[in-house]
Length: 426
Image 1 (cartoon, rainbow, N blue to C red):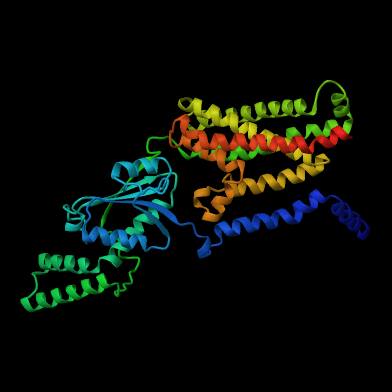
Image 2 (cartoon, rainbow, N blue to C red; image 1 turned 90 degrees about the vertical axis):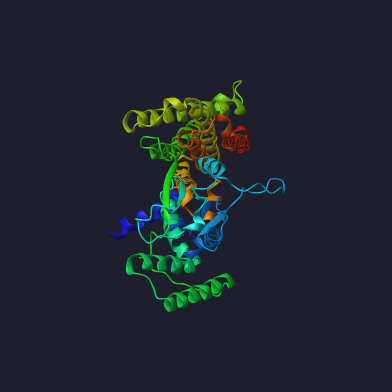
């Protein structure tokens, strides 16, 4: 028995690929998902929200200021400067366009008249203005958090208005106050307003204080789609398996080198450059065919809106297929054997997929992880397919994703061609 154990341990030590998968891969994945789900404050992603103040009253200003003081939010009232030129503030129309384009998952529209009746303690008040919440329904977390934070901020930023509104309800339903009580209440509200404006007032609220301002949520992205998240998962899972397919197909290069077929091919008029280009072309066709099957299945079974997005799908599908094919050729050029290729491709592809959004949406990751994901093929491909199928953007808006994927393909091919010189020298 001990001899069998010793033999197995020696065999595992010699197989570096299996050894790395047994110990390194679990640690790497644990670290990645610990950062995403660990719950540490410095890794919690902040929610970007656009705010449009149409009222410009003291109450609306306090509400906006209270939102800006929330540590979990990044509040923007105007787009980023262009060439150091400050842009005009968002309007309701421009904020809706920005949400549709993915600038932020939520936009808050504070309507005219909000300052006249900002707070209500019951649904019977039909005259109170309603804040519009424009949301991208692909982000299921941000709208819910913003709705709750609006109620909380209303309490912490406008306590004097709450007291004033409460006295009105008391007058209406409890018979009113005496003159002395009214004078005392007004004096308390005045002092409360002074403390609030001086910034010295601190208020603590509980989870039961909700619904004091009226909020109406409206989805501006994905509201008319059937089962819209299918397109995201089709792209996310599809790209991950394309990477596995491309690396596996590129392994034929190693098989040819081991069998001596590669030497015979190179001894003819075929150059290494043309050989690699042929391999990439075949692998690209194979990868694109897989994407077609994946999305057709989504259309047939899960009602994915496929046919109206054919041009965008073709552009993103071709660019993604070429990028993953070049990636596979690079891995095959680096490795010496099929066993090495299998271990290395599994390690690299799973890491790329976890960081790049194939396993978990990037917009729910911490900001640092979102930036790290931009180093992967997965992230750019998923962003492009999201623009096509989720946001219904025209092909001209795909140029950042197309440019990056094509650049990746060219760079990886150039590196693979350089590494493949070892077969020519041999």
